Length: 233
Length: 165
Image (cartoon, each protein chain N blue to C red):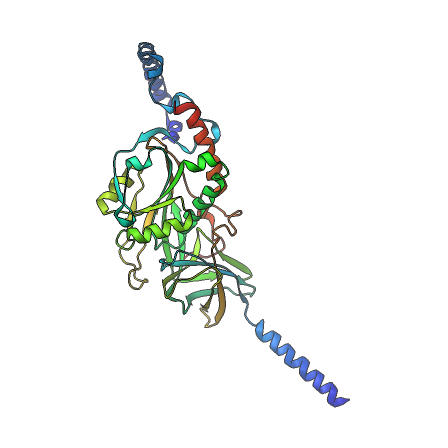
């Protein structure tokens, strides 16, 4: 992503510059030929403020449809993300440290966002358990809602989980049973980033670990403001 | 008069013995708490500070609690945003130093909870050290996730002071 820009050599920079100028000329001709309201839906036409830039993906990525399973056989599909800002976290219930920590931080962040009632109405938290063998949809729901009433808990079979998590490059690995644990104790390596999906169902931003409630709340409110002013129209 | 004096002396000696007995250990277990979790959760984490005021390194080799089937010493690590856990066989507490177990780093992994725990519950625990010493302590179940969060260090650097194994 952005960090790759720093690695450009002078030669490739020059080539890129030529390509960029060519694209700009072509784009100008193209945009000039279209009505004003049909400009491409690219957030980066407007540079985001510095303080939120690091949290945003270089390009918002439209998610493709998926299906995850919640309690009472309810499903969660792409349409359920539309019209809301979704905070998505991948974890598992037998994770005693990082998962409750991150879920707790998100719960606290949601409370801080509540000071802005309109923004609060637009948010939802989604806890995706990547350990469906132990985490039933009922357990996942109970677990997620413990941290905030804004949380929905879902899981799915391996194919469903992979189809969703790969769209965010949120890899996970279920480790074979460890020698020290008795019974069903095994651990899962998971991505502890909190992903932010915009109201159009596009992967828009992310909060890498370690997260803090104040940070998430403040940055989110600014991201939402930027989005509403520059992007949504 | 001599009788009274010897009584006082005896009391002093006894008192001294009693106080020195309770302060015999160089190890202090402080701020021991368990992160409250939803009722269905069977695996929890405990956090604490272990202070060694002695001149020799001490090694925590195990922890047990009647409230859990098993207790392990674990460390959460995050590399490239991927979180995973490492099981430690033991945890060294250097001489005149403290090791802090806190969210996002070193923790005690409490497995197979025998019953659901609620905020305010007290959980007895026994800390077993390499020299054979056992120290009993009581953990408080706490619901808030915010304790000590303000000064939380990035996870990769937490649990400073411990030795690697």
